[in-house]
Image (cartoon, rainbow, N blue to C red; front, side):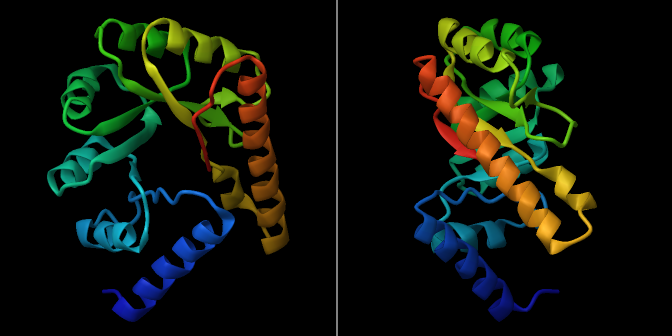
Length: 196
């Protein structure tokens, strides 16, 4: 049960903050898993959504959402689902290894990919200071995939014991992603969107 006034106020507050900072809002819908809330976020100005599961991707696609990032390591058995969605909408797939790129290259399609960056959580992604980053980006371009951006998930903030520590971790995450963009540009590669 949600208080609609509070929900709408929160959505508008976050969207206004993104607008003030000049950044796109791409909400992650894994928490609410609700088409109606996604529609409220989109109406407020969100552009695209992020999902955690293929089931979420299909549900939101069927509801008319047409710009979705699947922010989860690519599961080889879901390749046909990725191809199906990529032919219908702007569908982004996560890449964090050469093995994933090899799999995606077998399709012969110019799929949209996002490089997952590890900014300290240690769960998945390319370590933000790793030399693998530029190599992966070059391989993405060389095999005909579209590099749409780089994203990170600062899940290590969950263990923070104060607001100050959360702010410090968020700032470190932001700085790491700015550095990722700078490194790719220095290598002559457009990093696309940088997402936290």
